[in-house]
Length: 341
Ligand code: SF4
Ligand code: SF4
Image 1 (spheres, rainbow, N blue to C red):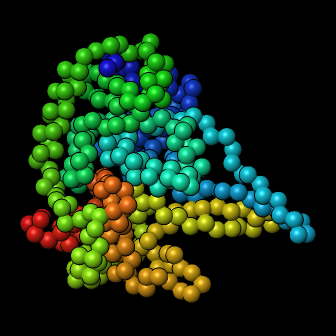
Image 2: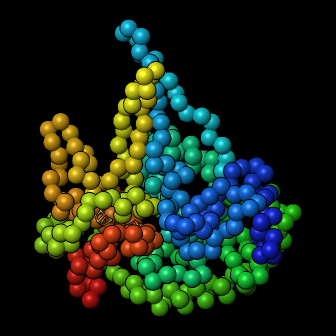
Image 3: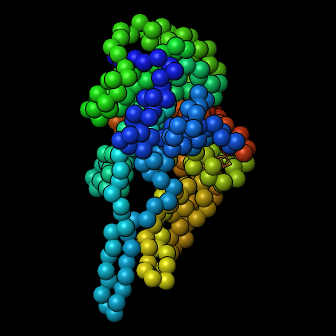
């Protein structure tokens, strides 16, 4: 483990930014947002960014390729530019875990080369939580907010910043930071962890139980009457899916620029009425079906196909942002029934 004085953190940022683009959370009018570092930006201590770091690896829109036609010939143009190395500092434990969920989708055969390329070039520097909020429930998914597992884990105390590399990429970056850091033991970090664990043990959602969910529960939960009531007020706005660090649905469209046709993809939402609409019509005709799909996917279908891993990390963003105050916790409590009484 290495450490530096808290007032040296900006020097650490400057050193990282010498070799790669560095992004970190910065307070803005709309809440904390990952922003490109320069010496005038100030690192935000806020718990979580409004949008998750998913954006760096799976951006909201991206061009995939372009086509040009001449007579019967089609020329396919690779529109990708070389991805540069980059680092994202300040990724919380929940968001760090979200990459396990995304990796299983995008890095499984056939590998999504666009995502894979960014994962290869990106370094995740995760920061341990010290003030978890009342909307946090990462503990329900066995995530330890005091030990985030990025390429590098960082712990901040009032006086010092502690670093531990977890991967080769992380170790290489720490090597570069060696002139500004020094070896240390983990006494202060363990004490910081204990203080945060005391807060975590008092959070209102600490006892949220997921035992009613998981693989193999489709038949049991699909026809549950509570879906009617839960979905009744859903506006289908898609906000919950767009702020979610683990949602990964997208659409692919072609756009005629006049000079060529550009094929791009953009985030989509299972909450939208035209999601997966095909020539024959739509698979899910009601908001109830669409709403049920979102939560069944996170709590039943995904774990069924991914060794029990849920595709929610308890970040709390949907609790904070849904305009009708509907969220996954309400679903877990209502559908989970007695396990959460
Ligand atoms: S479903 Fe909600 S709490 Fe779970 S990861 Fe997505 S935004 Fe966060
Ligand atoms: S649950 Fe809330 S945020 Fe999600 S689509 Fe419905 S109204 Fe919008």
